Amino acid sequence: MAPKWRELADRLAERIRSGEYSPGQQLPHIRDLVEAGEGSKSTVHAAYKALEAEGLVTSSRGHGTVVRPQAPLKRLGIERYDKVKWRDGDEVAFIADRVASGRTYRRGEQTQSVTLMEAPPAVAAAHGLPNGAQVYARARLVKEGEQPTHTLTSYYRPEHVEGTRIVDPSPGPAGRGGGFRVLYDHGYEIDHMKEEIFARVATPEEAKLLILPTGEPVVELHRTTYTADGTVVEFAIGVHAASRFAWAYEFQVPDSAQSRKEAH
Image 1 (cartoon, helix red, strand yellow):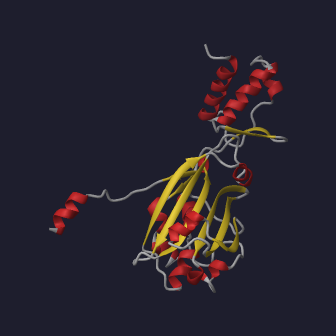
Image 2 (image 1 turned 90 degrees about the vertical axis):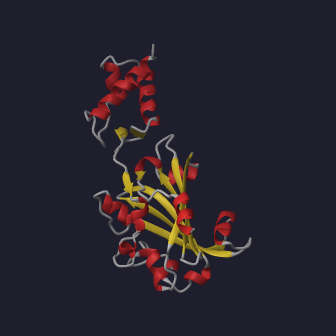
Image 3 (image 1 turned 45 degrees about the vertical axis):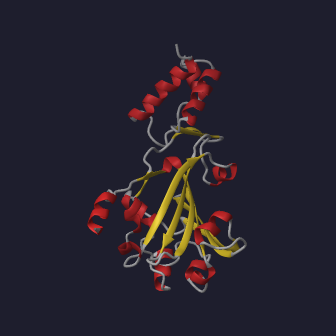
């Protein structure tokens, strides 16, 4: 038989999933559920902590326990990098995400810092640089309204970006079309990229910066961007609140056997 706190947590979870408690709505105070006969103070508290650990609610001093929004911000995968968005329009990748999700971007929802620094080992390896080489790091914090969604730090070789808007720390994207458009105008048209994603536990600093509920993991993205001749023009590391994104990829299934057959 399940403990009383688990039974209560399951009942509340069902009410949340059914919409009886809607996103942003505050759940009853602990004392109200105790008075309603749902259990002792410790039972209700344990049930609320379980709901928080399961990502259904957030708890904070002064705001109580509130139902979390469940609709993630959609990411387009391959389509978000479509050249028509940034070369011929003004949509950088994260704004394309907003458009695909039926949401809007407001000025001020991206801030950044730009630093000339010694390349961390992973960055030096991605760019094929020796240890101790200098790179520009363009670190952004992106929000949706007041809610942080992710950080993204792009690392560039100085010879690729010095004198461009990429090294301008002014808030917002690096002008019309963002960094990819800047590289394109500077003679470095992106041709292909590699993305690697994995989930992990957030560091205390990340949890604070992204305002993560207790126990929420992050998804780390590594993106390597190449020109047609294989030159790496950007290596980026993103840290995303796991519940705030859904990745979607559609691509042609490779057929190496067919390719070899056609080569002969």
